[in-house]
Image (cartoon, rainbow, N blue to C red; front, side, top):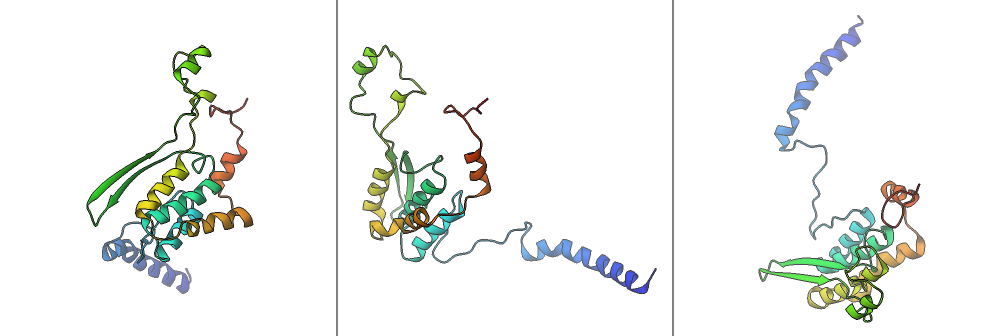
Length: 192
């Protein structure tokens, strides 16, 4: 065996136990670095939305402002998951006042969708998957209600990132590309 090979093997053996002990010296036992920020962080399923929310926080926006900005971007980059065509449900904790607020911004049924209308169609029970079970979207109204009570920044500033991505385009993540290219029927089952 050549002397350099022996030296390299001994060095590797010496380093191995030290590397195994590093997590206990640093208090970490995982591979990722911690996320540390002064203005707060925003976590979503899509990095572009998280960045949009974090930018709002950095500009002095409230948590609600950041959530609205992030949700607007999500509606663009993941439209099948959420967005302006859906509903909004919120639990908001105000640490200063110690108050918990809930918001149900699910949209109402269309005005003409009455029990009498359904009875004339022969529908006795509200269908689960049917045009008659669709509601008017409530997300944007929910954003507006939240912003009115808890927003700091002007309304139009919350949509700068979403508008920029809509006009200029955005990278599509692998998970979303897979969903967009996998044909499925309206009930979620794959096409035959």
